[in-house]
Amino acid sequence: MRPTIQLVGLPSDSNSSFERGPALAPAAIRSALWSDRGNLACENGMEVGQDFDLTDRGDLPLRETADDDALIRTAISETLGAGAVPLALGGDHAMTHPVVQAVHAKHGPLTILHFDAHPDLYADFAGNPRSHASPFARIMEGGLARRLVQVGIRTLNRHCREQAARFGVEIVPLADFTPASVPVLEGPLYISIDLDGIDPSEAPGVSHPEPGGLTVREVLAVLRRQSAPVVGADIVELNPRFDHNDRTAILAAKLVRELAALIARNGA
Image 1: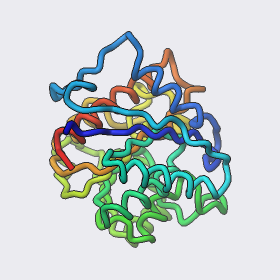
Image 2: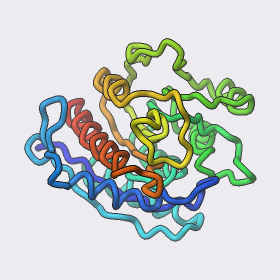
Image 3: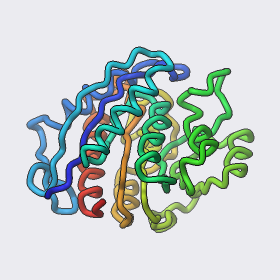
């Protein structure tokens, strides 16, 4: 059987700080993914629909309440139960916590590879423990990951530095960065890509742009080196309100293809 990767749209930004807009992202990513401006080939030689299937569950009917987390967990569990690997389209980064909860319920403690400008380790942000600035604190508190490796971080304040030390988070320095700086991780592997981890010159359509980030080529090189089974992934924090000529949506669509090809290549 060909592997199946299932897209799950999570159109919510109710836990965003400063700006709203990521709720619009799943539709923008799909539009770019299926556009005739490109094709469905991936850089490892695989093609969507030829070497693996990419199905789409559609967007979940999220209502901007705490009940949304249960809806997300149920949908991801159903995807896993059907034998597919979930690839979630955010939405803001708060979505990663319930997605990881569901993947953990299936696979046990995960190894997480996290691309981001921000560590998202706040105990809470502005009094909101479900903030998009806090999902990895919730993940680590819950024992959902045995290892968390963060790449692209360049806004590490004292509180988050203390949180990283508390949870044993491995932050790969961006100074003198090379893709080989990132370890080749053991599975089961979960990959979370916040698009603001990439430099805003290449990914302008985000709510919290931070100069000095990763290049797209560096992200792809890190992904290519990973050989463990990938049991779930997400792409989050696209804000179409700030995008320029759909550049960031097109990038997100490419990352969908490349993550799906990595999942198919590495096996379950």
